[in-house]
Length: 258
Ligand code: THG
Image (cartoon, rainbow, N blue to C red; front, side):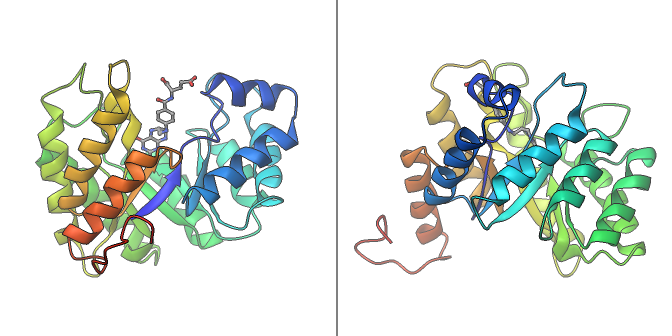
């Protein structure tokens, strides 16, 4: 499992404050602690409603990569902020994300091709959020086909079925699991899969319990990467236990410490 840290995100009040103050030390300490906790990739998001998103994204990327040496995932719906982040990075990034909207694909895939980036493909388009597993697979096929035309191999693609809050769209929980189980069969070599895990517990009680329970279910259906908070030790323990039970890592008596 690839853990993508969700914490470098202006959605969090403390991070928003640090961005406003251009507080490099706060961001860098957070980045280091997320990598030490097990993050293999850091998701970088300026947060909602900033009007100078390209400048902030550039500052965040440079600040983070001065402190840690991991891949970054540039998380923004804004084309100009995306390009700023991809350009500021000193290694290949994950573009987070394109959707199946023609206008978005027409910019994001050429950018991924030009810079050699990996790219997250969210399975929706301008008509809205998909209602079932088949709709998610149809969007996935459109994006996989367009990426392949530009020479972006499927191993560089992360398909994201779009996890929704269980309190608002409870019926989508099993549908996302079904889509996850279908994604791997859509191309050869199979695309990777990713989710924004904490979406599932937005505005609910017992967030960590819901997050780690759903993560285990997603892993059983082929999840490769999760945008989540690795400082949650119970979550990391559930990942390690799942990897043993799915025969992805060798059982040893000290598997939790390994
Ligand atoms: N797919 C992809 N990218 C994504 C998502 C996805 N990026 C954004 C999001 N979803 C994943 N990241 C987060 C980050 C934070 C939270 C949820 C998902 C979160 N934050 C607290 C909240 O809103 O309650 C902040 C609370 C605080 O201020 O401390 O839940 O699905 N590809």
